[in-house]
Image (cartoon, rainbow, N blue to C red):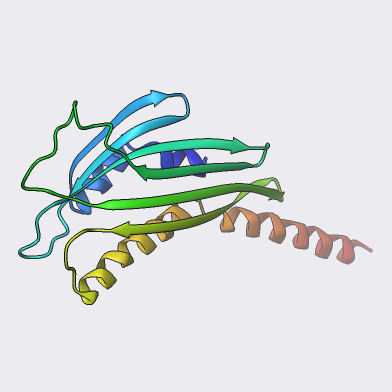
Length: 172
């Protein structure tokens, strides 16, 4: 469920959030059952900065039953179908997501997510702007956690088990 969330770039929710976060253009083209091209143009919302565009090949692979790796790498494969706009700066990134299924807790599925990213927005960018931009990456992880947080269900199951123990103690 969590891994599918990352790969569904064109869902209504993903598109709504994309535009809220400065997204201008978002193109997804399927390559095969395990990869797609992803073109993303963004307004960094910094006065005087041109829009930035990332052109990436996204590939995912299952490792065993419990692990999925999703990698984003720069590509030039979109040049013919989507020529570069001379008024846009092409940025670069390499991002790897690792999703690992953990043992269920009280019947609730658990997933560990790891993220390794290298992003170059291109050009001379002051540190205070980069610090602001990197916060958005942290926010996306926080939003993912909030969306899939099952703490209340896990706690409810544990509370129910404790209540049963208390009832059994009272009966005896």
